[in-house]
Image 1 (cartoon, rainbow, N blue to C red):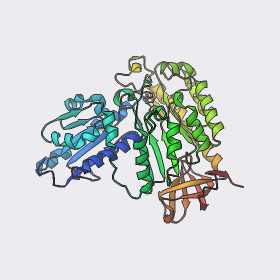
Image 2 (cartoon, rainbow, N blue to C red; image 1 turned 135 degrees about the vertical axis):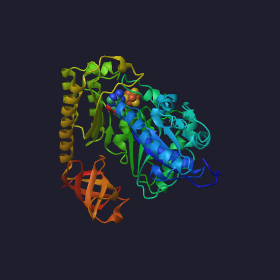
Image 3 (cartoon, rainbow, N blue to C red; image 1 turned 90 degrees about the horizontal axis):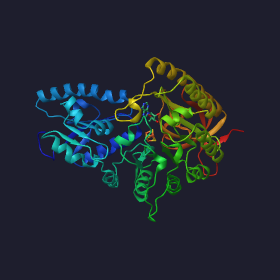
Image 4 (spheres, rainbow, N blue to C red; image 1 turned 30 degrees about the horizontal axis):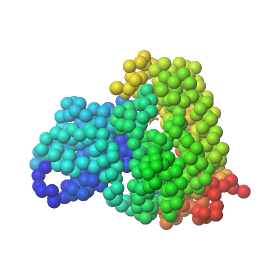
Length: 462
Ligand code: 5AD
Ligand code: SF4
């Protein structure tokens, strides 16, 4: 790269995949700001282009290579006008494929795994002089770097906060234990400090992130390992943080303190994303989920007993190796039994290095047909859930203007979008909304008052 370190340089980051990548991308931009990089929103005007990638399914990983093809042209055009552009691949594809990326795409200058972003300024400087591949698992170092205050992002009312990374569960389909490494938790003091900074910035809602967030076991100020439930009780004390959420959880880690948090904390939203993946015991065993269909249903009952009106969200995989029609029908049945508020569903995608990748695969047309049937069932469950909210009054955090003039959009306690006609001055605040109607994905309502500690987050309208 030409020029000195003091010259203003620009970075463009494109994010794929999960919310953890969204959080990481912000922190990458912050780390690079310290060495003079300003963020821009198009790759054409950037000196450094970073792709923060996802490896969870084949399609996600392949997108990266087609994007690299586009970036190659941008880099070549810049070179013709005498400007050097550095291309970096970050995230889970970087971790999983490492050197292989530069073999397949020599235009890439830098490969950096998710645990090494704190070293980006130094790695980028080195990449200007020759290829750099960095895929160490330095999670403690990464967490320590998160103690540096993030850049403030005005106008933001809901934010993510990473509390845990990695996974020790080794589900037979999943690359996460390989790309993000072993389960590791941030210390409580570090998380609480970041939460307080966010609240001071005007953020009203924080979503705690982790690949296996309810396996959280961060070190508390007392030296003990705290559970996620205990962390939530602690964060609920922070003035201004009105809403807490967490994602994503494993059924085996839904412990009693977490369920008590749902029972006792008004600030903890009545929403739980608890993937089950399949409704068949045979498939769950083959997936190495270490729980049965009945275990899962009993956990859902417990959570619903603790907090009425909970929205349950899920993830499903169809066509896992060995899945028969009868197994798939068990999955359809569990959708009805749980009454999901929303769910993501995917065709099984064999991931290199995972146990299930070498097993006999279900044919593609069978997977496609099952996915369509499952999605129809999920859409019906979601519509029923939304319809059941009409007539209630619920608190809504307004986040942005709507598509039509005079409209603003926020999130219900159950995470569904809520649209109302109201003054844009309400954006950033929480108001009580009488829910009057339901659209395909969102709810409609009218503002009936301010949120107050004396009223519950959700009420049946009299
Ligand atoms: N194929 C398809 N879906 C997968 N998921 C994870 N690994 C795979 C795979 N190999 C899904 C799971 C998980 C979500 C994040 O992605 O449903 O919960
Ligand atoms: Fe992957 Fe989640 Fe299973 Fe961990 S618990 S291996 S992240 S699906």
